[in-house]
Length: 372
Image (cartoon, rainbow, N blue to C red):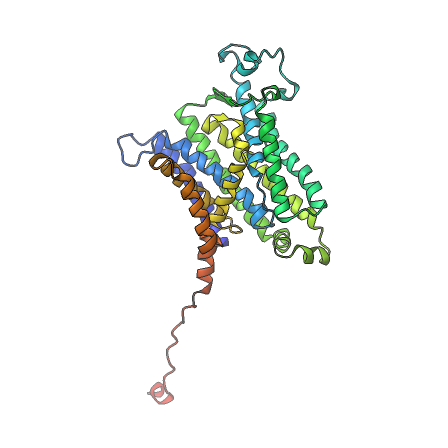
């Protein structure tokens, strides 16, 4: 598994360089050219892979089945969207130098206090990690200290994301209501619609995914990672041994939320919109499906699951739009019945059970033959 993780990280890093090169410098009539529309689509898939990897840390290695990771993803996306909205300036429909168009339309007189600072990229980058991480820390502090586990914890996390969904739908929240945030122009002074900008965003997303993969490999192989697995497999016994189980779970849950927020921040400039629909509980359930299909507790598995399921979703929603939900449900049922450890987990188990190859040792020659 460790070797597979290193191979996957190297492959993702190579893709980070290869796809932009094939898109920017290979002629469009070449069979090796990557079309412009495919670059942000692949970037979106990689953002989902980061999100699945984040859930794998909490669920696959610490036993925390969160049905609310879509909330952390959306909060990171909104933080980045607020920065992108502040970059529009007078180029909006109403040409207001400070207020976004939706605030002018709703007759807001001044910018809300929680929008201050989002005209600076460094501040937005901090909020991308701080807001989801702080929410996860506070939520986890109360939940884990109260020893809420299992299905009860899953229901509470789903209720959290549903509450945020209802809140962000309100126009008076100051986040665009049902329409959300869109019509972005620039990021760090570069045209967000430009071909080169999209290629750079894809490369950055791929490199961050590879970096997270290596970072989590280090975490799960450390002593802390072994304690996390012990908490997953025997929480009560781990507590009786003397470990502070709530602290271990709080670390995994908070780090996972920060990773989900970064995934959301990378998602928004490539897709071009963020709205309350990202808080939908159905989205959080899909994240669980990606992780389960690929294989939880394997690091590489959730990445494969996210890429496979979302590429299948893109195909089936175009070819058979009425059947996609049936395909997704059938996929989850089949994985549960026939591949309970996911694709990578099942392959690893099969490889471990293979009989070792017997090394042929030539028979020792008789002494008389040797003397001759």
